[in-house]
Image (cartoon, rainbow, N blue to C red; front, side):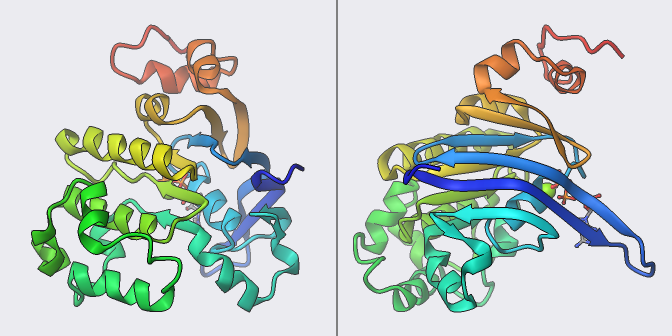
Amino acid sequence: MSEATVLAIRDLVVEHRREKSRETFRAVGGVSLEMAAGDTVGVVGESGSGKTTLAMAATGLGPRTSGKIDLLGHDLDRLSRRELRRLRPEVQVVFQDPHGSLDPRQSVRSGFSELRRLQPERTAWVDDTELLAQVRLGPEVLSRYPHQLSGGQAQRVCIARALLMRPRLIVADEPTSGLDVSVQADVLDLLNESLASSGASLLFISHDLAVVRNVCDRVVVMLHGEVVEAGPTYQVLDDPQHDYTRKLLAAMPGSRWRASR
Ligand SMILES: Nc1ncnc2c1ncn2[C@@H]1O[C@H](COP(=O)(O)OP(=O)(O)OP(=O)(O)O)[C@@H](O)[C@H]1O
Ligand SMILES: [Mg+2]
């Protein structure tokens, strides 16, 4: 593993215990994945295929049954809680529902202030107005509360909050699927621009292959908790080897792929 490795996942297994029973359910069944600095990797697969579970375990935010995770050069098994907390700002997660990620009692400005108080040195590189400009929002947004923001604006604020921390890895879990189609492309453009200027790596979770094509250099296709296909995006999308990938592609509007079943 080279120094520039941002994330290395080896044989990750995550089992969830079903409520009201002793049964366990294998949400992720032996996944390996490596990301270098600057990589943009898409994880695609149908609902329930284990994408979110994988991302949460990879960042140390979710449970892991077995397997190794190396995050920004640190073996998660060897990190104390305190060390993990110190690593937190370097790994930012953007979730599907922006309103659910923002504190409803906090204006945009006081949300930024809180982050600045927690990480004064890390966040000193930019002022609030410039930060908002980077996500194409005007300074008038600073005094607003989350309920006064549209879905697209709220997601821009979430991305701004992530960028403020100058993360080395951004994990975006369906960041645009809760948004109106008309603003989805805008938010994705923004994410692309931010990555280009910050050099952060991106683990991008989506069920939408068209989106992944626009954002990611590599793609991992998951089915029932396992990786069925992985490779450069153009290769996987233009010349899919697995029937499940073909099926996903066939579901895309205007696709030339037809699933065999
Ligand atoms: N906390 C939990 N307890 C029990 N089962 C869970 C838990 N979280 C997820 N699961 C189950 O694990 C499987 C994978 O879930 P996960 O949320 O990772 O899928 P996903 O690919 O992100 O789906 P979606 O596209 O709908 O977000 C699902 O069958 C889900 O029901
Ligand atoms: Mg999910």
